[in-house]
Amino acid sequence: MANYQVLFSGDVAENASADAVRDNLARELGLDERKAKQLFSGRTVVIRGQLEHQEALAWQERLSRFGAICRIKDLTPKKEAVMFDAQKGGSVGIDQTLRDITAAHLECPRCGHMQLDSTFCARCGVDLEAAFKQKRKEDLLIEKKIRELRTKRDQDRPQVEAAPIHAEPPPSHAVSGNGKKGVLSWFKK
View 1: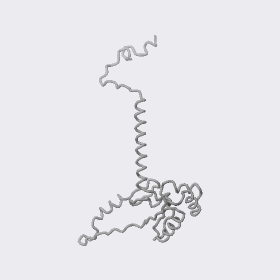
View 2 (view 1 turned 90 degrees about the vertical axis):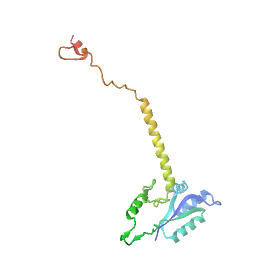
View 3 (view 1 turned 45 degrees about the horizontal axis):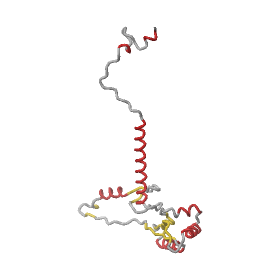
View 4 (view 1 turned 90 degrees about the horizontal axis):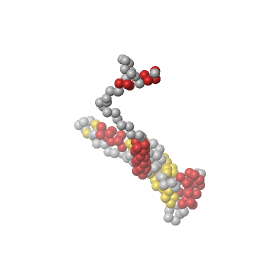
């Protein structure tokens, strides 16, 4: 089954220069200069995917000749033993298993791919733990900025005193009608 990926994180062999490795990888993979620089951005990149194990090993060997240190990731789902209870006529804890399966799914913060809980994203190959850590940092910075803006807004807003609950009735000269002088009565004069 073709479930193997060749991943590259920008690591090069001790005796190789990063510039030479980047040029060789660009030529071997048919990449332009911008994409070749992205290989060395610090993020894990999928060089080739959906390979047989032997093909993945061949790619790893080919790229290691240029000084690129690649790793192979097996995306084959792990088979878990399901206990069968003969008396109940079914699997033990099927409801618990379904809850575990849905709880184990997560969304890659980089590409949005839904997958089972793992170390690396099956689609883009990013290290999920590092990506979630970075996302938490960004979320905390955003929350901090929102709090700062709210406190600044509250400080800039003029303070309005609340009217007392039991206010006195308005003065008699402000009341109009019933023969009492109104506010606009002095205009008529």
